[in-house]
Length: 111
Image (cartoon, rainbow, N blue to C red; front, side):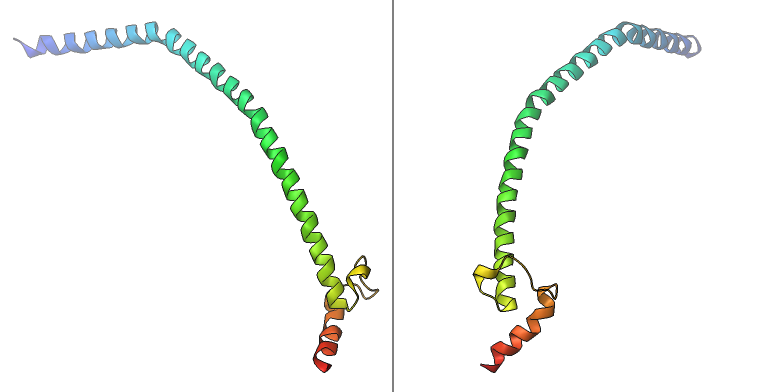
């Protein structure tokens, strides 16, 4: 067998088969891709409402926890400023609990 005649034949047959496969399979693969994209979008839409509900529940839970933390902070500030828990609504005119805290600590150590 003469390889100088067979090699060009193998290359040309491979090229023809490859081009034919691309021409035949491209529309099929495009339709398959469109179908998979549509299925994925449907799944995302169906899962999105469930995720949105979970997100709303989590936000409500965090809001509740934040309000509890704010109440505790107000109580701690009232203790630091020397006022009772009933007066915990506002800080003194000085501004922050840090400006009042050293005086409260001094009173606590004196007694």
